[in-house]
Amino acid sequence: MKLHLIDLSIIAIYLLSTIVIGLVLKKKAQQNKKSYLLGGNKLPWYMLGLSNASGMFDISGTMWLVTLGFVYGLKSIWIPWLWPVWNQIFLMVYLSIWLRRSNVTTGAEWIQTRFGFGSGANLSHNIVVVYALISCLGFLAYGFIGLGKFMMIFIPWDYVCGLMGISPDIVAPEHIPHVYGLVFTLFATLYAVLGGMMSIVWTDMLQYAIMTVSSLIIGIIAMNALADYGYLNVPEGWYSLWFGWKLDLDWNNIIPEVNQKIKEDGFSLFSIFMMMMLFKGFLVSAAGPAPNYDMQKILSTKSPKEGAKMSGVVSVVLNPVRYFMITGFVVLAVLYYDKLNLIVAGRIDFEQILPSAISEFVPVGLMGLLLAGLLAAFMSTFAGTLNAAQAYIVNDIYLKVKKDADNNQIKRMNYFVGVFIMIISVVLGIYAKDVNSLLQWIVSALWGSYVASNVLKWYWWRFNGHGYFWGMLAGLIPALIFPLVFQETLELYYFPLLLISSLIGCFLGTYLKPPTSDEVLDSFYKNVRPWGFWKPVKERVLALDPTFKPNTNFKADMLNIVIGIVWQTAIIAIPVFVVLRQWWPAALAIAITAITTSILKFTWWDKLPND
Image 1 (cartoon, rainbow, N blue to C red):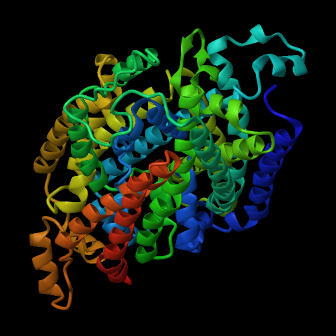
Image 2: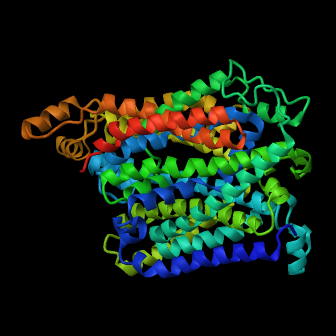
Image 3: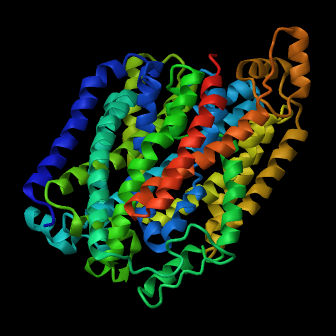
């Protein structure tokens, strides 16, 4: 048993507090549909931003980032562009504003503001619901498998079986993590289902406070250990941000198994990998948020201006704290690699670096606090995603069929849907290979199918509901099939095939059917005020309303995005350099952050619209 009584007590207190929060906010959440799914649009932007950041501070993602830091060193700062992490920059600069102006409850409902209510709009609405549910289930399964692998390090299966008086052989070794995942998933489901968005946000505030304290302590422990030891035994190039055509990190004389990990990841041709990340990242970010908890937090803000502020604050509150912890664990893992237990089912699993490092190096008391925080992080992500899935099923399926449903019926349906989605995600998690494979599929294959239709919907007036539907379908089907066809290929590398397939569906659907009605297009353009290829609509709107002011911010927005990406990357780099005791690079990153923050104050913050 790795945990002491004080650690278990801290974890128990946290788990009980989440249920208390859910019960306390239950009555407020059940006032109406918007109170449950969007917090009644009454929560301030900084609370929603902190909650959104907490939802991104998940166990599975943190395990993945610690593994990247261990294997790739400073170059790991670039790899999260695969997500892409700077989609938050696109959101803060303009897309959160455009999305929040719609005043809808879900992304599927938003489709009606863009395409109206005809057959094309109905098809588009349905495909978004399908995509949203697949995406949410993928994220839930991703969190589930990461949590299970994480907790089995601290509460050994033999110990649990001994307490319960059962044989350890009752569960196959490869399914033991799933038992742990199921137990803690039930807690997340309970408070999310009881209190809706309000309980999620308040629980996230508690989680963020815990994680901040834990991160600072872990980073300081690592810095002191590095100071005592003097150096890290890592290959040449590990300390360098920069790279050539190939990665050229050779672990053969240190930990030979790491080279196999690099080969399996598919990152050896690093320049090609970076170009693909930039290409895909720009398109995915320009498409706007996928229909998950991130979109729901934006729709929950009080106004478009607060939506932009919420997306901006995520980078500020998430990255310094998260990367201080991540780099701390990387340093401890490299220094004391021989003490880590990374063997799972007879093979080395580098995703076990984080839980094994916690088990070895975190003192009593702090371990309970840290585990409570990481459990909270998992539960935050799980609960936020579950809330999004509930929104799509209840708002976009159930209420379309049963339009006269009263508040009690909606409440019961929310409860039923929450439990049902949890069960399905657990089943998917059981069959997932590992955290990295599921993550790669979500961000590369699944999101690849989303890009074409969701870029065109914002920026091109002629794009219609049929184009959206066939574009999504032509991307979604290959996204489900390609992993079976290209089993030895990194998902990122067949992204262009997904994009081409989806674009063909977009253009065929668009030109084989008439445009969206002038009435719908004019209403959307006046309300959202996008820039892009909207000339015919703009001329018609101006003819009807000469006082209308079109959006002329394209160049300013693009400049702010470039500055914002530099700003965000520098914020990430600061804690990495500090924990590694690289003082001059840390000072440079701080200077870049200060300069870009000052620029964004004048070019973005001061110019946010009030409507």
